[in-house]
Length: 437
Image 1 (tube, rainbow, N blue to C red):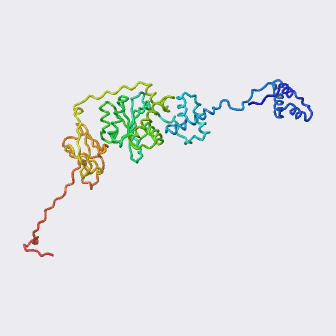
Image 2 (image 1 turned 90 degrees about the vertical axis):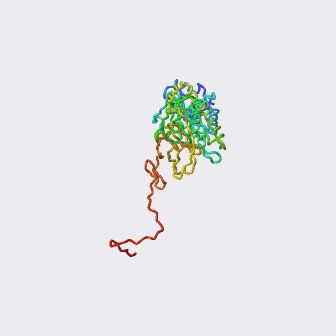
């Protein structure tokens, strides 16, 4: 509370205090009227500066507290909300806390105020100065389904088994279209998640991935199974430059958010348990978490719903080759690292010697998969009469296959077979037998 102000008559007496008052009069006056000497001289200074009349005017009281300060209850709510988000494995920065409280119906303070609350509570985690966002060149497709991005990351189950987690997102809205836990980064798993996303959200115009063998090995001179799957539906498969992961930066950042969440969850024993955890994460990510890359206050699902989808692509006209059914067979890789099918030796590599490979082919392409379903290599179907197709790798001389393009075997020199007859001594030009030396 503010201290009571002295009576106006006392202020008037001080304001008109005679300059020739005797020594000790000020102390006696202050003691009599229960005012401080500091207040007395403050009023006297005002009277000298602005005159006695102005000095008699009361100034507005100065509050002892700060009326604009955040209420203690709101401070506690902000700190508790941050702790709850962090415990669940979700983003828990100032913007995330403000968004969470706003969606719960509260009127939270600004982002800067929330950041100061975190700092005073000792909850802020200092970070080095980051590159300003204005320095980035952001690109985003104008409509949902304009382009999808796919990538896979690794995770360990409770028993130490390594699995692959495929994540497929929409470039425009950042919507998590589908996620899939698989035994490895295989083309079969990539096709499975693409099929699931198409069933849920329609067919995209473009499909961005890296240059991995399971996704899009076109830059390596191969035809991947996923590429064929997409082209058959009119989708344009595209890739980033080799060793340039920033092209898939949106997906890489999505992996980071998922890893933060999974580290806060109980370790999954089975792939099905991990899949359930990731499905729960996708629901929160799509419908509750406001995305900072989108318009303020929008979740990926709201951004997806706010803009009409891009028109679906037109599938290509089927031709005679495409109409041919795919066939499959199995072959055992020989000691030279080759599998023979359609009368042609296809080099798999020495790491596959002795393994049984699964082969899928049609009139246009031929694909080879290991026993786990991982694509080993793919080629356009060679012309009839082709003897050998390499894998594009350097072949060592001791492998038994020549390093030339046709892969012909080295021919052995043949020498006359020795007989068991006793050798005859040579004769000199005179016709007489020569002696053995």
